[in-house]
Every structure is written in structure tokens, then in C-alpha cells.
Image (cartoon, rainbow, N blue to C red; front, side):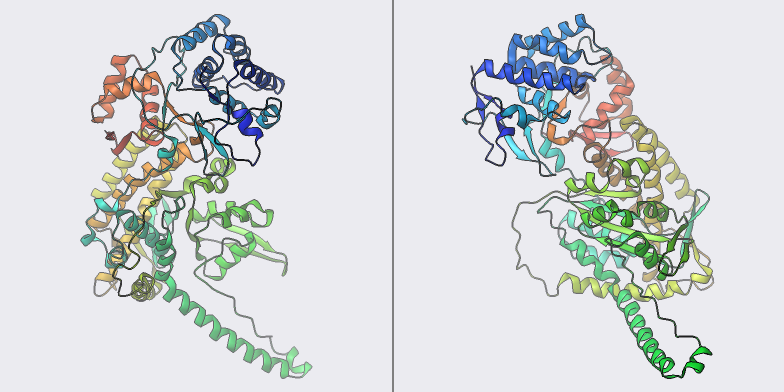
Length: 634
């Protein structure tokens, strides 16, 4: 009998090297599987509720145990209310006849582990000796050890999909690692010469497409958090420029330029600090004079008021009240900028730091109220305008945006962008006459002048508007996008798409304001409206069309929700998915997919989900625009 990977011994090995643990004894394998089944039954776990798991379990047991696995398969399947002994036995015979080693017994143990079985405890009952590896053991994004049973896409020889009874079966496996390394770019689809100077110059500091994407998103987010004197009306509500962006990048993805973008606002930040220091010096002088007065004179004069500390940036590791107070002290404007998102994650986990509610309200400028215990003061933020720019690793996203944050809507308030790691050495001595941070600071000095022009408008703010034709195109695009994404991924995408629409409106607003710097005068003195330039509208829509694909990748693979399987369990294609994939041309539309699904006897709702998986889970198809797709080359 060929060597089989022994996950029991692997789990029992503790901190010892785990790469080469196998077992050669069929009897021991059956006893380990039986002990695992008994534990699953003891804890009442149902690991074969969906057809995906029903079929995966059958292939895993058939591969590892052969005909001996039949009773164990029936025992596990019987935990489901859908269990029918005759149908189950038919499926078992199919798995036994068609298993080919691509799904191993390790998949069963992984299912058991995810259901709550302690494999280490069971593994200690069945010690094994090390030999050559059967499959690779790698570290997942969150640091846990996981098994990949295959590392290549295989679309050949789809199984005959019989007796599915509404389930979806999985048989082929696809690279989990490649799915985690997904990205799509948008700066290569833009005409850089048509970008506002305040954005174009920072972009020109980068020679690679992803670097330009990073600068565009970081710069627009930061600018949005310091852009007074401008508003728009969206869905009947007054909205301001700030929005939230989360950029996830594995180790080695080079996030340094994102941190450098802070320099775009440092001239404003330094001015605010200088003003504070001047007020502080004046306060100290007045306080000294007040203290020098005798008791009677002090009683007749009010004690000098200590100036509040102001800053453009609000630390993420603040308590909730400190964060709100910082926002209030800065005229209800501010930016949370963290290059290590776990700082915010830890804050949100603390009772005193859980300002998730405030983040959700600030996105829509909803009022925030809180009490300051020290002075027994009730504080109201009537119209908070908060921007957020966060970067993290993919593994940190489920920790930051926990199931609770997905459920309460914090997750769908972010624009998402995924970066790939690049394990390559670049020329660190390439010609650079001036550090990039210094170049960005000079751009910031230029924005500083525009910022002051905008401040003058605060009492009579300019209204940003789209042209009538742009409004029509905007509504048409997002109406179709909403239908497309709900069809592909379900109703959960409704809020993601709708808030992407609001963020896109804000992107267009920020771009249009930045373009004012290229004009003289920067702002028309008598005008009360600012109409979106066509170039800026197209830029915002191009970015949105790319970011919806990044969002669905994060949704399908990184955010915790019931419908998705972890990447580290290995990605599989069902027979129906393979059939549909092969029936489609390299370039295809939604209508093409409908016709193919009809000819294959696949329900349209199922076909929509398959296309969603092709795009955001398997990454074998690119979504080009609403209703248009292209297969990736092998």
C-alpha cells in the first residue's frame, strides 16, 4: 500500500518538525478514523450537511479506507436531516469507484478538526514514524498549520454529477496559495496626464503599476480627511469627502510608500501644531499672571482656559472617548492612519476602546454622543467627518473585521485593495535625486495652499455635483452592478455595492477638488457649485470597477461568513462548475453564461454562484466590467 500522510501524528507532534509524517498500516488508519468519527458523534457534529462536504467526505474516506469506510460514512452522513440510507449508499459506491487520490484522508481529518475535534489527543493514541511526505504542510496567514492536498488547477475528467438533489459537488482542487495572492490594478487603465497635478506628481514617484495604485488610494483617502468647505448631496443626504480604505498585503509586498504618503498632509499638521504651541505658550503666560494675583482678584477674574490639542491624525490605539474627543477638538474632522491594522484591532476588542459604533456612524456623518467622566461633560459630535487608511496582512482581516463587524456593517464601509508579495530584489541604488518622502512633502505644501482656500469656504461651502449625463451613467452602472453582485454572491453584497457607490461619489468629489489647484483662481469666488470634470468622473468609475473585484475577493476568501470556506482547506471545483467553465469562450458575457447553463441543465442561480467563485475564489476568470468576463490564460 502506498504511503499516506498521517495528520494524526502530524497534529500530535506538537512543536516538532511536521513535514514528513506518514503511516503505512491500513488497520491503524481505520482505527484512527474510527476514533475520530466517535468523537464527532460524541460532540454532535454534522460535517456532511452540504453536498460539497457530503461528496468531499466520501472521497476522503474512500481514498484512505477503501471499502472499510462505508459504515463510518453512513454514521457521519446520518447526522444530517437530509440523510437517506439508499442515496447515501449510492453516493458511497460512486466515491469508491471514482476516487483517484486527489482528495486524501487528510481532508476528512481537516473537516473533523474544524468541527471541534482535538486531533492531537487522538493522534497520541496512534503514534507513527516519520517517512517521506505525501502532501505539503504550510503556514496559513493566521499562523496555523494547514494541509494542501494539491497545488495546481485541473479541469479534466469532471465527475458525472448524479443524484445531487440540489447540492453542489466538489472534486477538483485549485491552488489556495494562488488565490491568496490575488490582485487587479487600475492605474494602468488611467491616462496619468489627465490626473490632477496634486495626484499625478505623487503617482510619478512610482515605476510599477501596483505602486501607483497604492499612491492613488492612499493619497485620495488622506486628502479626503482634510478637505473642508465642500459637500455633495447623495441619496437626499449631505455628504462630505472622507472615506475608509483598507489595503491588505502579505509580507514582502512593500507598503512603505503608503506610510510616506503621510507627508502630503504634514504641512497642514505642522501648522496646526505650531498654532497649538503658540496658544499653549500664551496660556502659560496668562495662567502665571492669574496665579500671581491675590485671592480676591483671582475670584473676580476667570481662570485662563487651557487650549485643546489638535491634530489631523487620530491614533487608532485610543479609547473611544479619546478618539471622539480628538475628533471634536479638530472641528469634527480627522484621519485614522495606521500601517499596522492590528493596533485598531486590539483597541476595538477593549470595552473602553470599542468605537466600532463611532466608525460606522462617522462614515455617514451621523451624530455621536458621549460623556466625559472627568468633567461630567456631555459631548455631541453633530457631523463627524472621518477618513481611515489602514494596511494589514490578509490574515489580520478576519481579526479586524470579525463576524460581529461583518454583521454590523463596519466591513462594508471600507474600500478594499489586495497587494501581492513580490519576492524579488530591486535596485536599491536606483537614481533618486530626492527622497520620495521629501517629494511628497513638497506636494503637501502645494495642497496646503488649496486647503486654506477651502477653509475660507466653510461658512458658505461649495456643493459638488455630477452633470446630468454623469448622474445617469452612475445610476446605470451601479444598478447593474448591484444585480450582478447579488446574483454572483448573494444578498450579503447589497450593502457592499451600495456603500461602494457612496465612496465612488466621494472619490469623484476629492478628484474634482484637487483639480481646482490647477486653475487660477483656484476657486471661483462667486460660484457655489463645483461640477465634476469628465476626466475625474471616469477616473473614479475606473477605480470603482476595479475595487469591486478586490472587495469580492476579500468577501469570498478573507471575511468570516457562513457561505465561505477557508482558503487553507484547499479550493475545489465541482463537476457542474467544470462543465460550465468548459462551455464558455475565453471572453463571455452574462447572456453567454445563461445560454451555456441552460444547455447544461444548470439552474441560473447556481450558474451565477459558479461565476462568482471563478472570479473571487478560484481566480480563473477576470471580471472586466458589469456582465463581461474573461478567462485567465493557463
